[in-house]
Amino acid sequence: MAELWTVDRIRADGDWRHAFHEAEFGGFGGTGDEGPVGILAILEEVIAAVEGENDGDNWVALVKLTDGRYAKVFAGCDYTGWDCRASGNVEFYGTLDELLSPNTLTVQEVYRLGLDDRIWVDDTERTLARASREGDRVAAMALADKIQERCGK
Image (cartoon, rainbow, N blue to C red; front, top):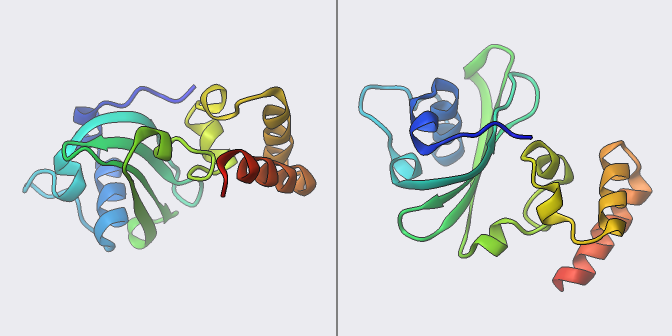
């Protein structure tokens, strides 16, 4: 299960501040005394979030903003930290359903965020997702086809 992250905790955490800055603006920053900037300043709610690891999994946050939009924020850095090689992105969505769509999140993100029971709608999807997570490419393709059929995309 993913750790509980609140708006205040994310705003106070150095890695999260870097991740949000990298995702929105690119480049090193986000920890100065100016306070939160960009979308970090207009966070209303953290729906789900999971920390990353240098040279490993990305930091991923699903959030609601005060302007009513939802966003997926993801960023990562190399083993030296945020000031060398880092990258990230922000994707905006109009509804919570769009944000929590299996077309929005990777299988790995679904499991890391602890959302598997909310995203996969039946036992077939759950079985394919588990196999996909374990590296089964045929299962990954079957899951993608099933999701496209279900979501109409």
